[in-house]
Picture 1: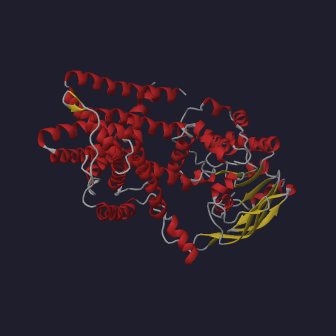
Picture 2: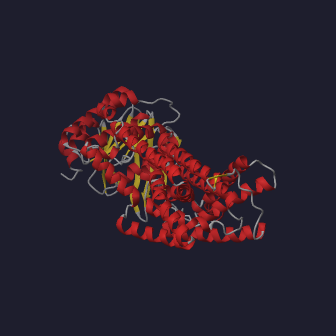
Picture 3: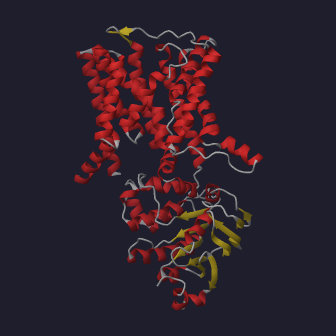
Length: 233
Length: 333
């Protein structure tokens, strides 16, 4: 079953940044979107969560047209979002940051604090500490944990490896796999770190200059050169 | 947890110090102590609603004095015309002002109503919300304040009958004014608990720090802003209600609060409760002593001089100093 679908979506500010995007994510999949800096990956994620409205085209979630739905309505209906650069609330404690994630998937009536603390024990240890005082890697864990607390059906991740040290990046890739396996969360992520893409994705879309130019299946992901040709490496 | 406990310790120590000073002062020099604490209460109550709306929404509400006027008039009219008991009349005053604030937020501040009309007629929004548009919000609310003052004059005339001051006096000082000191502490406690110990308060602080991320996490930021404005307005109305027995009921009564409110917000800085209460504690004695010694005009000049000095030497306000001190103490512990 298709969870999220972009049908001929064009997005922009004054001029189009994304053009005629067709993309589909099926239930239980981990789908990556790869591309160099400035190709429109973050714009794609912001459009998926509803922070940007398409100029044309249609977006559906669980078969429902959400093209004009607000970001908070999309989150309430089960889409979790981890923005680029984490964007945790620095003056809220770790516990309060996580509590804000309860507004994701309000229909689900399930909270996943246990799973989050199991994945990231440091968050439980530092529950009373302000989010802004955590290290970069811990802030990334907090951002992931915050999006998971409400038990989303679909998780959107915008460059999870950005600004995080390599050992933590590997950990995050494994954690996302675990989340997908154990909680059954469908994941769509954008990334330009080759290792993360190969570790996490079941399949990938490649983007260039605001368009999807290729689709890479599981076999293509074994071919390092096939992915690297779309990245700034 | 350790950090939260240490913050609570500082807060409790500050409250104990203020209460101890009040008790010692009341025994040693009762009249002066009551005057100073009343001035502190006046400043804190005048500023609290404005501080919430400015600190959280980035809106400078120049009609704040007129929101106080709405509370004072609604209280006075419900007591004198409808025969409602004074405490219930005060709640009516706060509630009417909160509802009025809700309408102002929907029609002017968020632009929801004109934009809905625009979408239905010309297919586009007509105005951009005034959130975080300081200068624009000043112009819009200044216009509103002029309309409200003239509107009150047209509807109610140049004055309405005043309510009598309740209670008697202690050491020649009205008990009602002493009671206001306790009520101010209660209001500060309720506001503090609302913004730090409830889900609504956490949502408000999250929206204040990063509106887009808050939206993407499912928080209805528009509703959060709307309720925040209503709460700030309701507190302004409650201030008007509390001072209704002490003021002559004229359409311009709001202007008596505006200078104190703005100076307290500027000196207080970003934190609504800590900033407003500490600036009240700093400015209250200045206002009381200068007003007593040289008259009310001198008291206001002294407040403005204090604000200028604070802007020069404490650009982050008292909140900035408190944050720096806290960081230093926690870093050293």
